Length: 327
Image 1: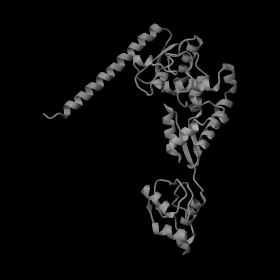
Image 2 (image 1 turned 180 degrees about the horizontal axis):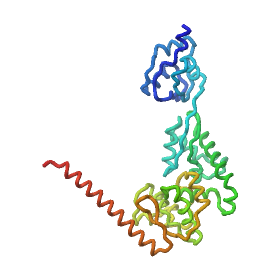
Image 3 (image 1 turned 90 degrees about the vertical axis):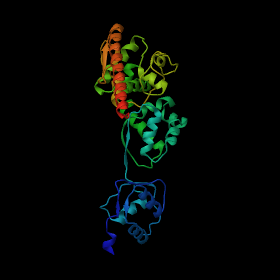
Image 4 (image 1 turned 120 degrees about the vertical axis):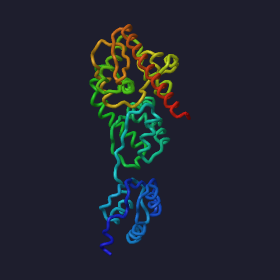
């Protein structure tokens, strides 16, 4: 009997056990079945009976097949969870960020949405509703799966405070910028720039425009205004929206997304150069120019390249279609 009690837990699965609520053994077995786990059900029932385990706590538990069944199950009874690594990435839109975070946690997207618009919480954090997105700093955090949406927001916001507000306070003072202005600029850079080594240069270009009281003319703000990332058309630039920097001067009212620390630092420490214009290139970088005439020349090259890509794609589709037609 003692030997049988010391047998490793008879569960084989690549997934952790996730119990959304407190449950009985039947609930545990159902969750394991949902993950296609191979389980010696009679043995688990026998162990639960011997140790009088009839209630298991909500949580996320890694299955360690080297641990005796009664020891592993005792953790489920006591709610001794294994933490997970919550990965927060820079997202294009807030609804994407909410969905990605919630998919890793127990709470629903609607719960996180409610927290991000909770006026009392935002007041406690000292941030306005349209700025909170900029403070959800991309990084990997350790949480218990059952942590609430508010717990996550508070902890991530504190990390932002430590790594941005505290660390760069003197730089913000010297620039005369608020932290929200910095994250707003960083969010444009985050969306605009594919390669990190170009961020400071793009930041310098936007700084040059601001110093000359020029409109930012930042395409990401137009994408944000129209609500999708796609190739922009002339009509889009005329779209009346408070974030469209082809229609307003200066920075938009708030950040477009949650920029990474590298983008925030690029906004705070821009490269010094004379450039005022840039055009995308096929390799994901930009060509920078000082005059509008130079800019128009580079823009024509870019448009020609885009049109060539469209024609090439249409030809491929036409050839694919003709090859499937009966002869």
